[in-house]
Length: 348
Image (tube, rainbow, N blue to C red):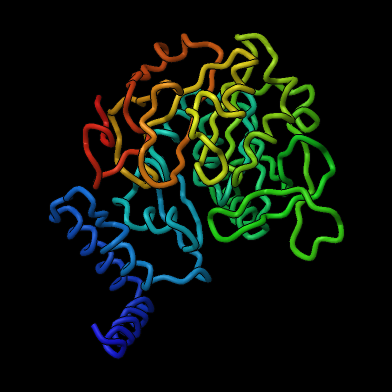
């Protein structure tokens, strides 16, 4: 395709984007192509074929809304793969993003919950609706925290707390995102830093006197520092310590000597936690009726390009049987349609 015809295609799609009804038809057509396309190993149809076309139909200034099967209405901007895959999901899906992680949040969420990196509420809103306690949300992006507030308001949820603060190992420090795009990392800076900064707070100081049932973290490589700031909760007994869920990514964590030997794994094991990779799609995939599969931390298939996935850390291993979790050793936590199904597809 020559540059002129490519430009014409973009211009045509831009015109289509101004008609919501027609745009919806195009998205549905592309989803239909995915269902008919033979998922060959090595070909990621969503990322390589259909997704880039859908991206041209939306812009990040438009506020979109989609309803879940629960009746929750989620507003969001088209700024990420989360938004793209949510748009391309079926009508009234159960979840916004990461079906098995969301399911596990609902299983483990009790009492008060902390979510670090709450974004626009893709999981926080669903969790808040299901718990009796408070969902304490931390999000440094002013745009996303306003969208989160809008979603709470539109769904009549009063049990969310909004904190435009960064969770860290020390209070009252300044953090900045250093790096580019999705792999920017949190670093401490001083007041001479020429860029956007965020004030920090520890979980220990913020949640003092509260009973936390769950801590969920997805904070650009800052997970270990945030957990270091939660020691008073991590050292609690098996019956009182919160369950933990957090992202671990090869861009931030050196797991060349084994994931079980990383600093964050050793830190949590020192408090009596057992760690498991959560098998999940980083997308919106219908997983209704399937159990959550977990992989022991010392038996995770880690080969492939730098990637990340969510980790479950629990002290009370009876929760595995209680919630019907399935232990699957030797496979990848990354569920993928375009890789070896023996490694990257559900076993249950």
